[in-house]
Length: 280
Image 1: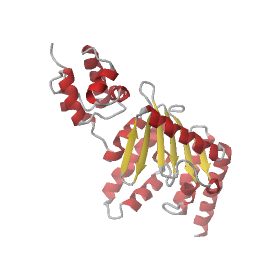
Image 2: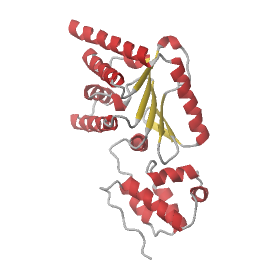
Image 3: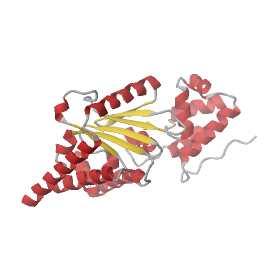
Image 4: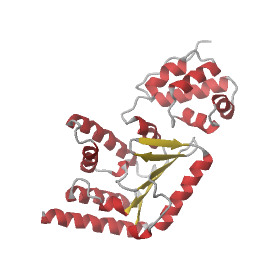
């Protein structure tokens, strides 16, 4: 029986690779847990590979080919499936974000990428890359703005963010940029497209002082938690670990202002920036 054909990179290669993995695994009469055990990963990780929410790395692909007898198919095609416009440490999380049905994100310092405006994103990237060419910054901004389109659908994914008050107070790009960026968030909140809460400085210590947190849920795969720091990120799928971060997020929401109070604060700070810009 001939093996599967190589994938066309232009037609959702990761989803196609996942479908081929499911097909090959079922032909081998292995459950997700059984295949995961032989690869020294969890069954849920195999499920995420099959649903296209996780990247298949070359070393895993080679082992899958060996176990399932697929004649190098997965190793040949995982390179095409892993092509991304995002930095390596964030690519897998960005691609999972694009297919998530619910996203909950705590932002300690910056407006979440999905909610950023063009001028705010440009100021963020220029601040982090002071010597980069304009073309390089343009490419980064384009990739960042592409992520915002996940909110084009009126209901899916559910997007709930908790912003530290520092996000509002840190003047990125100047007062005009901040006024525009915060008004954009307020509009999304007022039209009920996103849920926004602010955890005020007066809340003191809380469960996520160590850094940013993103939780993602899916229709046909287990939830994921993503933690990001300077130039690095970790995607977690262990159920106990994810549950721990889900509790942390719930406690953040309990310590934050209500959505209505949060929107009022965001709009007030935006107005302060607008006045500051006019005074200048």
